[in-house]
Amino acid sequence: MNEQIRIGIIGGSGLYNMEAVSSVSRVSLETPFGHPSDEYVIGTLKGVRVAFLPRHGRGHRHTPSEVNYRANIYGFKRLGVSHIISVTAVGSLKEEIQPLHIVIPDQFYDRTRDRKSTFFGDGLVAHIAFAQPVCPELASLLHEAALETGVKTHGSGTLICIEGPAFSTRAESNLYRGWGMDIIGMTSLQEAKLSREAEICYAALALVTDYDCWHEDESHVTVETVLLNLNKNISHAKRILQTIVPKIPERRACLCATALEKAIMTDARAIPEESRQKLAILVNKYLPQS
Image (cartoon, rainbow, N blue to C red; front, top):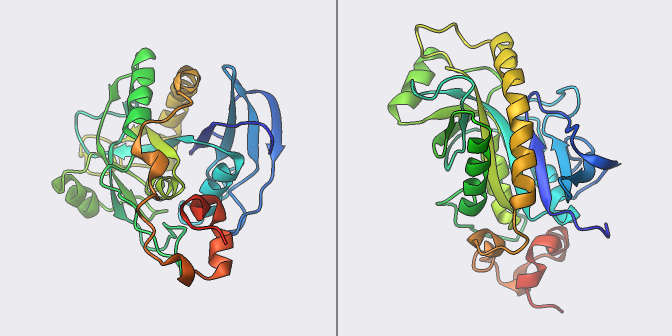
């Protein structure tokens, strides 16, 4: 595409469209990793060109494990996106993080089993640094934007990502609390890893819908509870996105922008041509050109 689209927005459960986006068009992309969750909605938000993608597809058709995370992030990269803001529904594992609060997670713990979390393989190996899994600059801007809405916001926290689609057992929920986890979800971990491999800045806006199932004074988590609280928080999420998008700078000083510079392990002469072509959009600037 010829136009510059800097900002990508991933909509989670309950966020399937952005009414504030104007001059809208839809783009269907095919990637080396298959089809993304849906068409990308391209438009203008507060004077900035953005690409919006509903993670689960319109109508919520894909389970967390069925989401094609690689295709989704690859598609954003092809569109020229440099920053991704992900909106995700989570449960709370801490008393002080209450339903309807917002968390900007800065750490993740992976409990998924059946998902592809890397673009690499097939003769091309890279090991990204992931000690700091979200972009600190983008996360800080997101925290500031959330505070402006007046919603109770936590500027950090560890999100444990489970396979789903079932919610946790009480034993699991209490175990995660004992591990020191703060919130629980089913999606953000793969997005964060793949965004880092794609050298895209990533931060998540976590909307707290429930107390998972550990809290004895609260009802067990149900879809009805999740949707009720999620719908209350979606309006806040949309206001936060409108606030942050025009504040995201074009120039990047973070390490996300050069995450692959020293991460590629494979000798360029040993990389299969098919693998090199598949990941050209990611790796070519670091490999000698023939």
